[in-house]
Image (cartoon, rainbow, N blue to C red; front, side, top):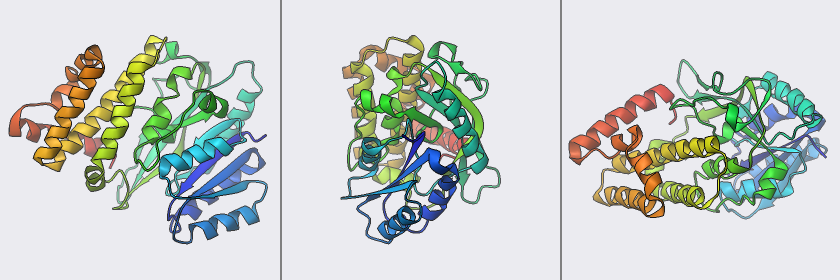
Length: 338
């Protein structure tokens, strides 16, 4: 059994996947790299097979029909032999020193008395052309270098939430909670992080800038124009998160509080993309999304609708939408998320 499985979902990734895979190879025999070729039509399959041939004890390749990012992650989970599980997208990479530090920590955690469900580290926005790289760290919010529970988690600020880039899950937990991401859908990385959270008891934070999240390609799913074009898929994920939160019993109050914060952020993203679309149809979809939340859970609706972001995204009329857009642009410049 391997210590860590890293799944690399690939779709027509020939131009950048080698940088990603090369950054994972220093993990050595403790690491299993599963490259999932999700029905690519370029040289992705050929490159993946070459790595499997050169590193047969480390690299495995799954060739499958195209099913989207979620389908590729599902395939990785189903085939993982590692005690822990990480997703690294094919246009991203990891920092070597942080990687080795995390592997040392995982070895110690596996040998400890407590079962660790989730390991968290920092990630860096590698935004093309940006002079300064924004780091999302969790110091002062999560205890560093020690096992902790939700009850010991501090306050998350508005730009500080746990994305796929920052999380390593225990593989067995992902299987036990029945995580199954929808196929042919973008933005499912939010579900990957969100749905296992009620099952997480013990966590461990390593204050190191591990994951390098590349932003710069015009065709990336997080590019604003692409997000507007695919806004129906963003709404789909948003509604699935609403469904999950309103139908799942979450015993720990801090877990629930954090999941509400996460949903608040995703609903804000959906709302601003619909405002930025600048069509009557999009505005109607925004109204319908909020009505969907209201119908599912009136108390949760009021909590989000009358919070700062809910008020900001629902200011009345054209002047209100202009104000919402202005605040979004300020946040965009500060956070550098797309």
